[in-house]
Structures are given as structure tokens and as C-alpha cells.
Length: 206
Image 1: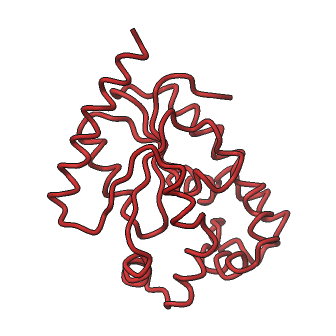
Image 2: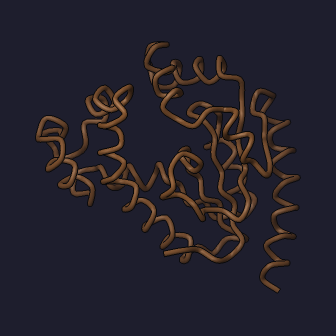
């Protein structure tokens, strides 16, 4: 499955502010296909990912109401690459298929694939005509993750270490938004890029 229309692959490390940026794009008229939202849908009670996860990891990682025990799974896979790869092999093909279907059904000016792992794994190749990276200093990432998710510094650092490095993301970026400024400044930058993306989308569809 693939998506042939103009689209943006939006990525960035945890705590970089991807959701804030994608929300602005959505308000401006883009359709957002969010891999994290799709993943959560697969791991709620009755989600398509639950039984494969149960088979691979056991009942201990499924809560009493039938959802993924996220805290327990996080402890299991972060800092443990083989286990993380086992979980990714279950979820990522499912997420990819749903993301492409959502993109095909989208009615916005263009599609943005929001995915923190866009540049991490081959399964995500082909998501986005252009790559937009939301960037910020690593220390700011750590502080945001600790505040948002009530994690320790060590846990936040482990999550960041498991993702593509800041340098790798920036090297593969077509566009970059540095999210260490006031929200108003980010709004201006997103609005500027939106105008550019509209022109590109219209040009490719002519």
C-alpha cells in the first residue's frame, strides 16, 4: 500500500512539540494522519493489536479490561532492543496500513503523516513527499517529557535514546521548525510553510 499524492512526513523526538505543530496545520486545513493515535487505537480493549501482543508477551502485559498495559510494556521494551523490535514487528505494519487508508480517505488540502519514528525504520519509507522535522534542544525534550508524563530523567533519556538521533533527523529534513520559541513564533512559521505546501500540492495535482 502506498500514497501517491503530495504529503508531508512530520517527525521529531518525543517532547519536541510535534502535536502542537500538527494541530496548527490541521486548523489551517491539512489532514493529519497521526501514527501515535492509530497505535493507541490498536492497543485499547478490543484493538487489533491486543491478541498478537498477548500471544507474544503474555497476559501480564494486558490490563484487566483488555487494553495494553503501557507502563509495563514501556519498562519491558525501552533499553531492550530485541523486545522493542518484537513489539514493533507486531504493531508497525498494522499502523502503516491504517495510516495509508486514512490518507486516502482524507479531504484536507494535503495530508500530513505525523510519526515520531518516520526516519527510524524501513516500514515508514514512502510516508511524505517532504520531511518536516520539529526540533528542539535535547535538554528541553527531557524537561518536557518529565513534566508531561511524570517520568524520571533516566526514563526520559531512555526513550529519547531509542529514537533516531537529533542529528539523523536534521540530516534527512527538507524543512525544520525549531520549537524552542514562543507559540506565536511557531504559528508564524507553520503558516509560512502551509502556504508553500499548498502551492506544492496544487502543482502536483494539476
